[in-house]
Image: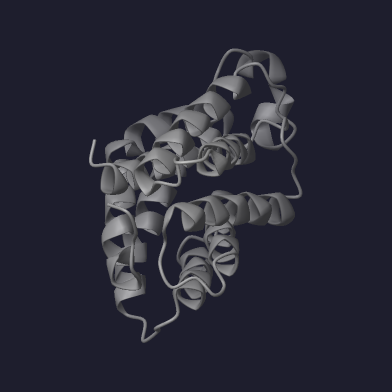
Length: 214
């Protein structure tokens, strides 16, 4: 697969929703230790609703469709992570202005925009032990591969994004959280991946399932 058309967006997010369904229990278990315990449920509901949200839109512009879908997802799951992920999708869509398809360049732009949205909405930075550490690393590694001559290939860029997401999750194990219950129990969180970062990785893994087919 070299590009994703606007008609294919519901299928792309169905693959993401399947990953969140498969990881619902894990995310809830992780969140019960450092959060409210409902992260898996929230992500399954939010991303599970996205395909129908996209199908229900009478929109022919890729960027506007994603921007609107992100806002609707935020309304569907108005939790902290729901707002962060919905805002990420909206900003990712905003970064695709003038793009008619999601190609290798488009995926890089989407991930960078997603990270920007999280940073602005969450008022966080890389190193704060959040989902931004996952998505930011995914965007960086995707862009590095895209900029290599001969590697402007959607599958390769997506694989690089997944590797970056996994590295970002791993890095959070050594970070001191600054937000939520984890910030209060910093000692207990040492050596444990941030649950929000894991959620970010699950999303990127869903992209890879659809784009790479592995």
